[in-house]
Structures are given as C-alpha cells and as structure tokens.
Length: 277
Image 1 (cartoon, rainbow, N blue to C red):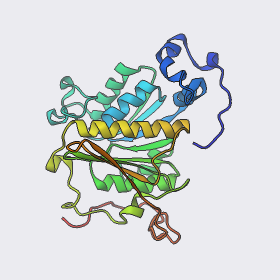
Image 2 (cartoon, rainbow, N blue to C red; image 1 turned 90 degrees about the horizontal axis):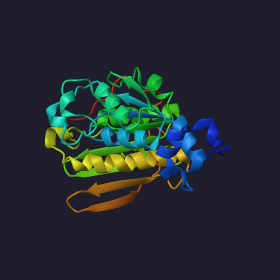
Image 3 (cartoon, helix red, strand yellow; image 1 turned 45 degrees about the vertical axis):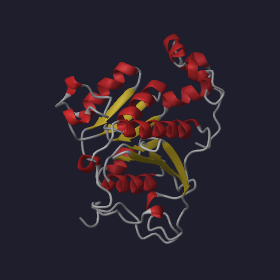
C-alpha cells in the first residue's frame, strides 16, 4: 500500500503446485510473481462469516491471500444457506468460524485461517485487528460497522465497508490515514434501528451480498497489491432490481468527530448502540 516492492525470486516462494495454481494471476502485469508473493504474505481480517463474508473468504483464499482471520460468534442456520455460500447443509449447527475454515480448506489448503469465536467489542477489537493488513466488514448491523470504522482508524488500517439488505447493497473503502473520509464523515452517529434494519428483520435477496462481497474482495486485493484506484472517497450503490451500479463521491468532513481537525472521539467507546428504536 504505497510502498515499493523489491524483486522476489520465484523459486524462493513458489512450489510447482503454487506456480500452476496462480498462473492466471502471475501473468497479469498488475500482479506478477512479486504481487502474488505479496498476497501470500498478506493478512486480511473478515468480521462476519455470513452473506458478505462468504464470497470474500472464498475468493481471497482462491486468489492466494496467505492468512485470513475470521471473527464470528454465530452458528450455521438453515436460513443462512440462501446466501452464505461458504457453509453447507451438513454444517447446520456448527460454529460459522469452523464451517468457514473448512470451506476455505476445500478451496486452498495452503491458506492459514485464524478464527475468533467471539463477538467483536470495544474491549477486544484493537487487539484482534492489529495483526492484519486490511479489515473487511462482513457484518449485518451498524453497531459493528461503527466499531470497525473507529477501531480501524485508531489502528491505522484500511477498512473495506460493505452492506446488503433487501435488494440493495453498498461498498466503500475508508482509510483516512492516507486520504478520504471515514464512515463518521458521512454519518456521524449510528442511525436508528428503524432507518437501518438488518436483513434478518426485512430480508435480503441471496445474490445481493454475493455481488457486494465480490466488490469488497476486489477492493481488498487492490489495497494489498497497491494497484488501481481504491474506492476511497467513493460510495458504490448497487440495486439488483434496477441492475444498476451507481458511484457517489463522498468527502472528508473537517468537523468529523473521529478523523476531523478537532476530534471528540479519541478512543473506542465502551459500547456501540444504535440510536432510537
């Protein structure tokens, strides 16, 4: 992310099986042998192994991201299977972290998977996040999204935001340490429950988190490889019913309570609770 990559000898990093596996990526000038070796050394934390986390984990593993962390305290339920494609019918009742780790192993057994069978909180977020290069949002509620936004800011990590509900989804990248806004620049306070319902409350079309998760995975690869233009300062809006992707430019707010000139949020709050009902 903004640093020069020293030349890496193929023989020092790749087995013959890895050379075959990643051939379609290493022939890309944007990736090459050096980029693939960088991916194998990278660490990405995915918070939530559900509708967004499933495609993210599968594709990042397939692309050769060497270490994937998964935070989730839930268990696989039959109602998850319309969209949480990393899980199977046979895994109903198992911890999602265990099921997701198994799914990753089927895709790429070389990937190291670190599991955190716990709820992400203000007390543990910074300790978990600090070892990873990118923090990716696979959560389904704004309490966790704001916690991730704030924790990633304090840890100096890029935060790949994603959301999917009903037939619509959103993606952005928040990395105010480099440039652009954070989530609080756009929405300083958590929205009320009535204005930001979850998929479990109002439903979600199964393919929508799949679409959003793939865009999140692409943004993560761009950050790790330092290629392309990350979606910093832009908000992607997807409508499945309209078949339309719309990009909205979002700006840093100098009065932001977190990343502004005179911040009022200087540490993780004791709790993250949506306002209203």
